[in-house]
Length: 188
Image 1 (cartoon, helix red, strand yellow):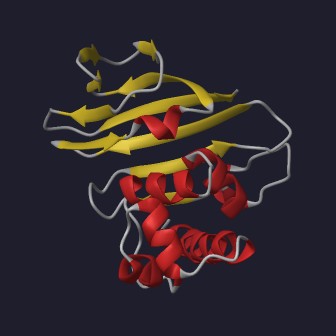
Image 2 (image 1 turned 180 degrees about the vertical axis):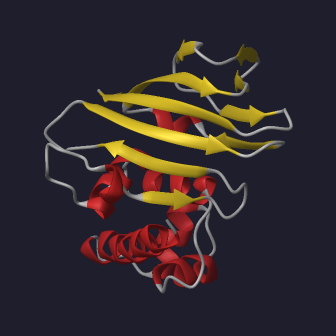
């Protein structure tokens, strides 16, 4: 799995630089638009560090993309069949959560992702990551607390939550065991 993660990190680094270059932006331009430092962007583009989910959302938003849209461009998959051995995997260096892209095609409105959130970890994603999508989360194992703004939902295995309007959202595994969940996205 580490090889898959390393390969994807390289593709993501190239994609970020290509997105920036295609717009004629300097590192300073992207830093100003995203709120991510020039030094961090430079390290990400050289694949010296792996960006956190929050940083990726900020960079994607600066390009007027969703996180899913940025990942799609980095993954560049075009097959209808998504073989498990070829599904891109990414590990968030901040939380250690593992994201596996199960299915994603530019010509298909549905995207499937699985996430394994380690015990006692959480991530907060900004409202901007939900602007162009509709999303639901279906817990496969463990427990997951999702807080959308001031509204909190506690999900166990088999529970499913459809998201409301875009708002800052926290995904938290407050237990001592990993939580695995499926995210289904529809682009709007």
